[in-house]
Amino acid sequence: MIKRGSKYFRTDRANWHIPFLALLFSVLLVSCKDNEPKKVAATGAINSLAIAINDNLWSGEIGDSLRKKFAAPVDGLPQEEPLFTIQQFPVRLFDAYKNSNTNLILIKKEEKTGYRVVHDQHIKPQNLVVISGKSIAEIIAFIDQNGDSLVTLFRETEIKRSQALVRENLLSDEKLKKRFKISLDVPATFQYVMEKPNFIWMKKEILSGNTSILVYKVPFKTILKNDNVVNNIIAMRDVFGARYIRGKENNSKMITEESYAPYFDITVIAQRRAYETKGTWELKGDYMSGSFINYAIMDRKKREFIIIEGFCYAPSTSKRDLMMELEAIIKSVKFL
Image (cartoon, rainbow, N blue to C red; front, side, top):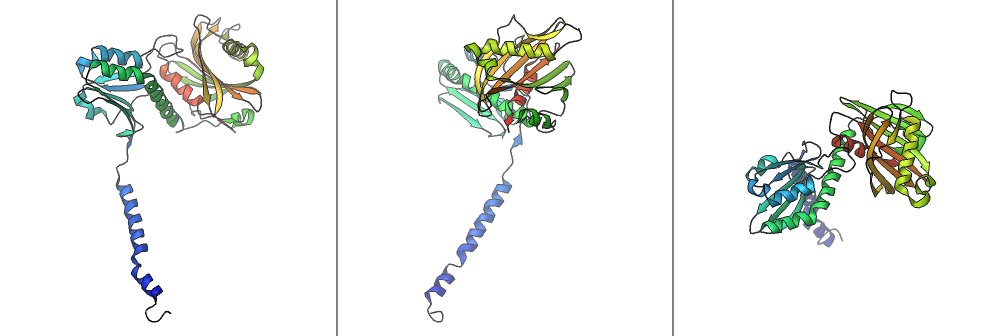
């Protein structure tokens, strides 16, 4: 069969080039990927928003609509601070700004009507929102319809950016693993200042004060009794604050500020139901106060809540970005 006219011999000879072409194609494919320009990492400030819109539109109804959505006050802070620090510039300067801003909105009044979100086109991460309309009313309609989802998108991106910065240099979380069976990405700029069997306090000193992370756990009934979750969370944090968080004065203790109604929401963290509470704390008897964000994360198997709270004391500076870092740390939690 092999000597003369073997079809097997002729078939192998006719198709000898197929493996070679496959190898050549794979090499070229890898080469093309290697030659693709890598996107530059975002360098803009956390919680910033760049808006490309011509001055006449920015000073009118469209600008008012944008400011209402994206410069609204942050929930849970004692003083009003905007969700995002907005930088506006004319559309003709778009190319000069597109490579440095994580969150970017482009507004154009033209015949073409549309709304789209483009991810990571110029840098990574980046959310580029393009809105165009024939009339002011059309553009405002796009902003009103999509503004809330864009705020959520922008904040989630900023949380991830903050977490990436935190992971560059981490504090050991072995103590958290041992006591609470969780891992948490905490910057090495924090240090453990109190360790109890069911309570850990980590603190970071900053120029204008300090920021802190608390971790403890409570049984279901502490938060779910009487179906009054908000009041139960406030009562719980007041108990732990009075027990462990004190000022320089002997009789001082941390409590939840009663003058401000706390912000409350139900969310999901680490695939678990969680209660989010934001508000203001004070050291009763020591004239200190600040902002807090508290997450009560449900562990159904153990019928308990893991409580992770961040709070700051920064009387002479804005608190928005400090609280963003604490939120990013808390949302990095993983159950072991």
